[in-house]
Image 1 (tube, rainbow, N blue to C red):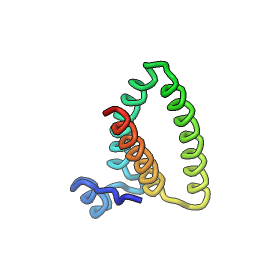
Image 2 (cartoon, one colour):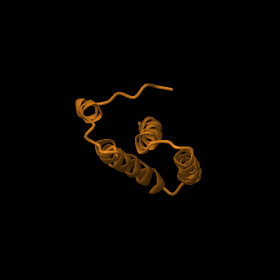
Image 3 (cartoon, rainbow, N blue to C red):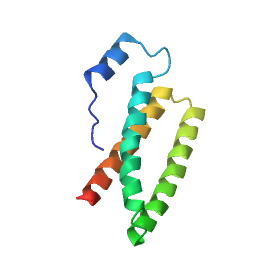
Image 4 (tube, helix red, strand yellow):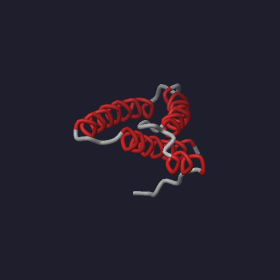
Length: 103
């Protein structure tokens, strides 16, 4: 798996303990990163062709798998930071795949 890089703000938030139990900055980054993936997916779905149908099926499967993994992790004691980091990995992988498809 590819190592994800973090910004100086991520490092500051981690090192300063500023999250008070919840990784606010990582959560905000997840929201922003997800918006780009949603934009690329909507562009693909707008074509309403076979690739769009495949993307919809893939997307739903990924959503269920990610939700199951998050709940399982939470029940097993995973921290909010670990769950958000994992979601960010999924989002980054989708961004790479969709941008490769786009070009």
